[in-house]
Length: 354
Image 1 (cartoon, rainbow, N blue to C red):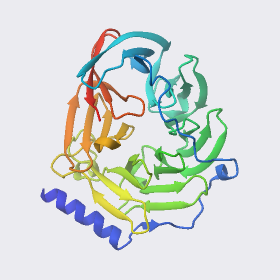
Image 2 (cartoon, helix red, strand yellow):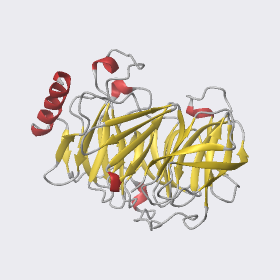
Image 3 (cartoon, helix red, strand yellow):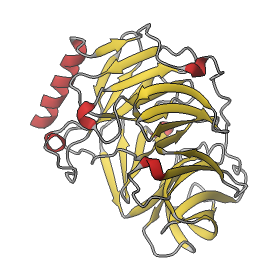
Image 4 (cartoon, rainbow, N blue to C red):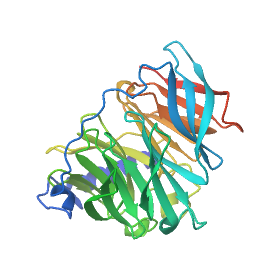
C-alpha cells in the first residue's frame, strides 16, 4: 500500500501542475485522413450470428488459424462446447484482433523468421467468408476500429497510420504504437513512441480523427503508458502505467509493476487510479482487451493468462492457462478457453454474464 500511495501521489501531482499535460489543444496532427473522409462509423448493434444457436469465431492453435463453431451458452450455463474447426490459414503467429460485432479479424504471418521484426510481417483481413485478403506488409501492431471500417497499423519504421479495409491510407500520425479506437470510431488513443524503444516514450495522445485535433496528452515522466480501452461513451480512457521500479531496471519478467488508470477526457480532466496498488498487472503491451460495461470489468488477455479487473473496486482476478477469450456479440458474456492439445471438443468457461 505504501508503493500505491507514492505512485498515485506522483502522477496526480504531475497532472495538477500540468507537466506534460495538455487538454483540448488546438494543434492539428498530421492527418491527411481528414481530407480523405474519416467519418464516425455506423456500429452494428449485434454480431452477425446473434440469433444463431452456434457462435463462429477465429482461433489460433499451433500456427494454424481455425474458424470454430461453439455452442451458444444460455444464462444458466457455466460452460459450453466447441464442436468443430475449419482451417483458414497456416504459418500464423499472431491473431492480432477480432471484431465480434462485424465478424472481421486480423491475423499476421511472417516470412522472415523473426516474429518481432515487422518488416517481414504480413497482415491479413478475414471475415466469415473464409477468404482472407492480404491487407498490409511491414506492420507490427494492428487494431480494428469498432465498425470494422478502419485499421490502425504501426509500420516497420514505427509510424502509426490509419488505413481502410482496401489498404488505402487515411491518416499518418507520426511515431506511435498501441493505438485503440473509441467505440464510435471517432477518437484514437496511442502510445507516442517508436516500438521497442520505450526509453523514448512520449506518453499518451488522444486525437479526434474527424477534425485532426489533439484532445488530450498525458506524459508526466516519459514512462510508457499503454492505452487499453475507452468507456462506451468515449469520455474515459483506461490505460496501463508501465512505470514501476522493475520496469525501470529492465526486468520484464516481474509480475508486480503495472497499474491501471482512468483518464476522463473533459475540460475538467480527471485522473483516477483504478488498481488498488496491492495487486498489479504484468507487462501487457499487445494484450487483447475486452471492456464489459454492464459489469464494470476490464478483461485483459496476454501470454496465456487472463486478468479481469473491476474498474470500480480495483480488484483483480487471475486466470492462468487461458489461451483465448472473446466477447459474445454485443453482450457482456465472456468465454475463456483453457490450454489443451486439440482444437475440437473443447470446453469453454462462461466468465461473466450480465
